Image (cartoon, rainbow, N blue to C red; front, side, top):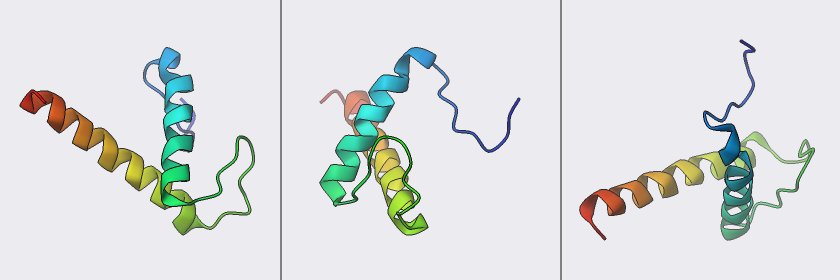
Amino acid sequence: MSRGKNRVEVPEAREAMDKFKMEIAGEIGVPLTNGYNGNLTSAQNGSVGGEMVRQMIKRQEETLAGK
């Protein structure tokens, strides 16, 4: 198993996750592009991942609450 690589547990979900990542980046103002993003800071990249997790948790909580 390779280390340091992002891994999607369900390979069919990769496209949806990439789309979600781009939506979140747009919402928080991070100029994320498909492909290389070495021009972005660690804080910018981390903020996208952090917001993705917050949104996924929020959506799951709403689902469990029956909303």
